[in-house]
Structure formats: C-alpha cells, structure tokens
Image (cartoon, rainbow, N blue to C red; front, top):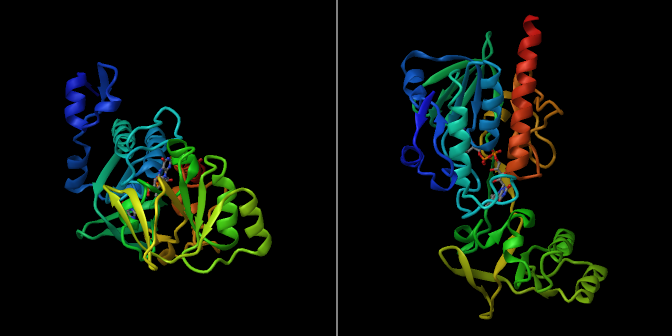
Length: 337
Ligand SMILES: Cc1cc2nc3c(=O)[nH]c(=O)nc-3n(C[C@H](O)[C@H](O)[C@H](O)COP(=O)(O)OP(=O)(O)OC[C@H]3O[C@@H](n4cnc5c(N)ncnc54)[C@H](O)[C@@H]3O)c2cc1C
C-alpha cells in the first residue's frame, strides 16, 4: 500500500472533488502491467468495470479471489454532468464516482484489470474462455456480466447530444435540479399518461409531447387536462441546444416550444451479446434473467446492474454487484468445503 499526499492523489486520478482528506492510503497501481505479462487464468472474470462490476470486484477481492475485470470504458451515464441519489456521492460527476471506486478496488492485490472489449465467450471443461478484440484470451471458472445496456435514441436531430443533460431518463436522478421548471415528456399512450403523473410530483408546468397523434384514451386525456398538463401532438423535427442544454423544440409544422428539460424513455439493447450467446435467458423486457443471487440461467454465469433490471440507478448497480460477488464466492466455497 502506498501513502499519497493529496496533491499526488489528484495528479494520479484527476479527481479533485474526492480528494478532500489527506493523507490517503492508496493502492499500488501497477497491477495491470503485472497481469498482462503472463496471467491468463482466474477464479472469476468480470466483464464490465463500471459501478456494478467494480462492486462485484471489491466483494471478490476481499474474499481473496483471483479476479480479472475487463472493461472498455463506455458506461451509459458518461454524458451526464452530475450524478445524483447515490448516498455519499450525490452531485459528483459519474467519472469521479467510478474513479474512486476503481482506486479502492485496485487495493486488493488479487484483482487485475484489462482495458478492452470482450468479444466472445466459450464454455470450456474448466469453466469459460473470454476472447478480447485485441486478441487476448483469458480463462476463468465463473463469469460475471456487469455490462449494462445501450440506449437506442429516436432519429431526432439533437436528441443524442441532450441525453443525460437536458433530456432525462429518471426524475429521481435529475428531477430535483429542474423542479418547478417548464418540463416536457416525450411519450404517448398509457406510458405517457403514467409518466406525466409521476413527473407532476416535481413540476406543475408540464407538457406531454406525443410526437404524432395522441394514443391516450378519452379518460386519460381528460385527467391530464384536469391537472393542467398540456398535450402537444405536433411531430418533432429537431432539438436545438447549447452543449446539450435544450433551447427549443422545433416541430415539423414550423412551430417551436421551449422547456427546461424533457423526460424520455428510450428502447435499449444489451450492451454485450456474450451472455445471450452463452445461452443466458433474457426476460420479456430484454433484461438478463437472474435469481436473487444474481445467477443467470447458465451455471457459473452471474449478471448484475443495468443489464438485469429496470431499476436503473448507481445504488442498485452497486448493490447487485456486491450480491453477485458474495454469492459467487459462496458457490466457490461450497464446491470445496
Ligand atoms: C444519461 C443517464 C444519466 C444517469 N444518471 C444517474 C444518476 O444521476 N444517478 C443514478 O443513480 N443513476 C443514474 N443513471 C443510471 C446509472 O448510470 C446506471 O444505473 C449505472 O451506470 C449502471 O451501472 P452498470 O455498471 O450496470 O452499467 P454501466 O455503468 O453502463 O457500465 C457498463 C460497463 O460495461 C462495459 N462493457 C459493456 N460491454 C463490454 C464488453 N463486451 N467488454 C468490455 N466492457 C464492456 C461498458 O463499457 C461499461 O463501462 C443514469 C443513466 C443514464 C443513461
């Protein structure tokens, strides 16, 4: 373990906001180099080294397991300026939270890291073999997929640039910051109706943009009107913005509207296709099916975080990662005891 001063810590990590107390005990950061020389066999390979994968890695590192975390650095929230609703880290950048988490996991000498994309998983006699895009192959008895999901944006100019900044997925994560502001919901039908009801908790200045003819029922329309929630059916041409902060919604009929933020629920695909290729069952919503121990339908394969649940928060991802790590370790213990 290395003793760093606060200045050295900030230099090492780039994370000024978390470097509040000095001195700090920090890990020897040379574990990557050590691993890359000749270390290819592990107890567990974790694919995905964001919040959920790092939480699993910490539980397994503390259980003395030899672990490899493979990650290609594309978490779903990377564009959002501040992350909220995760106790002790409220308002930090997503990168600062992940950097501190990684730093803490790196303290455990049996945990190694590999930066890159896992592209294939094969069942072997001893367990599993994982192939990376760069041509490396690693083996492990068990796998954890903490690979998250990939949001699929509508084909509307400006949407992707505003995602996580002023086009929001979750009021619990970002609603407080735009409370009582003019707010839109991009949705339709029963989901749009229910989403409007939820968001009315944060603001009364609410417009439902159905982006085409409304599919609300007569009763739903009447209820929204009784709550002063406006319904706009114009088709959306584009969103203009400054650095992701919405300026105007431009409609195909030439009109415009202005709101501070828009909530949208977008479809998703699994970020990583390896679990499915190995035979892991997905549920009807497209999430990897897991039991309360985070075990998938394939023996020896666990999954945790966003790829398994619609309860999409950093706190849940961490909780599930911790569970996966602990339950997987217990299974390994029971194999021998
Ligand atoms: C725009 C936005 C803003 C958000 N804001 C908040 C917030 O304020 N507060 C909050 O609590 N939650 C927030 N969330 C939700 C939160 O970000 C997620 O719940 C959390 O990131 C899930 O963690 P995870 O580890 O499961 O997946 P992710 O964080 O998505 O990480 C998955 C990791 O797996 C890696 N990976 C995937 N496939 C492979 C592969 N084949 N090989 C190698 N690596 C791979 C990816 O590169 C990535 O690093 C937000 C989500 C979004 C989309």
